[in-house]
Image (cartoon, rainbow, N blue to C red):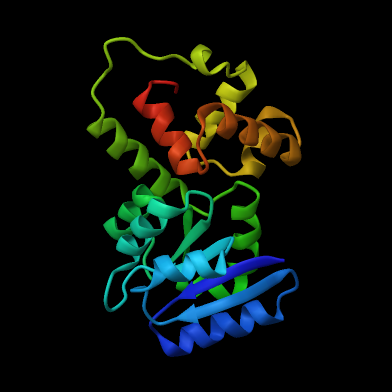
Length: 215
């Protein structure tokens, strides 16, 4: 069972999310809250595997909540739920450590799939947002005096290829198709990439890859 916490201030949407999770096999609703002010204590108490986080809430915002969670927990997957997918808030949330995002209008159709995706290392994120992240990171990063190089992390040629695809925001399905391998093989490579780079999320992997000129 995948344990899930919900943070959403709209009562109707929060109740809909609760019902959807309760009716979905293999998903376990641990708690649902209208505010994230006590998120640190709640995450430590419930130990969720996935958090559904509204970006705009009273009290601390979703972005601030992500930052608080990442200060104590690097492993939990955080999916932002938002009205618009091209806002700076989504980009800020991803850069703060969110695993991906889901549009509110798609929740009823795509939430279970998005949770399974994120659990298998495929954060729900549009190519547009991925490009925004890469552009922003390149802008903030000055060329190092000496590039670390993929060789220092002992990344194989295939792992370097997949890391480059991750940086472009491509889905597991797209990577598998382009590289002529199975999705399970892609997942295995991604797991090894995370281990070698000592990261836990796609955002962290892409950030490290760009900062150290691995892609």
